[in-house]
Length: 141
Image (cartoon, rainbow, N blue to C red; front, side, top):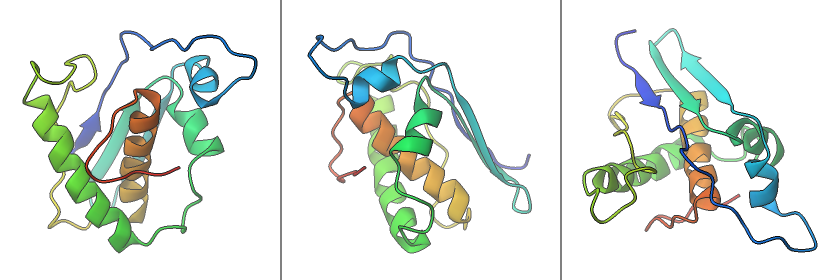
């Protein structure tokens, strides 16, 4: 592949939530099997590989359906989220290096297509919810 957007975030640990009467989002995700999700735009030679426990469950159960957001919306959000994420990767003393492992190689001048942008945005939504991380750009379920 000419270019590769690769997110390999193997959680070394899952934050446990105190037990309460009901099961919530974090409980369901924490109990999910390890997931690998690959979305590729083979005609443009770009792909995203996400290895994260519970992401596939999140994508199929909680994420907004494909087509809910426009490609322009996703591209704008991803541009800002990737920038902030990569800044956190570069600051291991300020941000948990077990969460912010690899930089994301995302060039906003390249049209990655809808599917790649959809998957990347939803990874940020999942990451934000699962690890209680807040970005300056809001993410939503």
